[in-house]
Length: 166
View (spheres, rainbow, N blue to C red):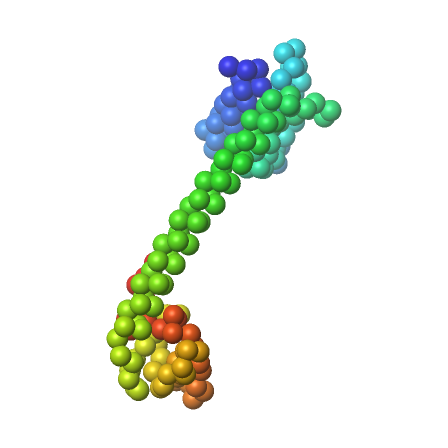
């Protein structure tokens, strides 16, 4: 275990101890945390409130004494972890968007396969509407419930069934 990791474990133990004391000390009072720089002989203490410590951790930052820095290797490891987390989040978003796109395409196909007749109830972006007439390739004229205005919407937005809750 590297010195900086050991120091980070010590600081996490201090935080855990503070949680166990359940407010025996006020959060506004500074606690003494160990500098997490990788210098082997560094034993410098860094005064931080518990909320200040949590803020550093939330942003993936180390507890460092003024003028101290993390070694390049540790900075690179932390950045790599951040990038990996961001990549995982982007993959999850892409998966969700692809799923929605497949659902929209399937819904679009169902709605255009069935004959659209005047007065038919349809759903557009989750809102119920009444189909009035086709506008060629532009789409369909619909009227939302409770409204008097006629709107033209793309055929791909029409659905014959209400959307499922996501």
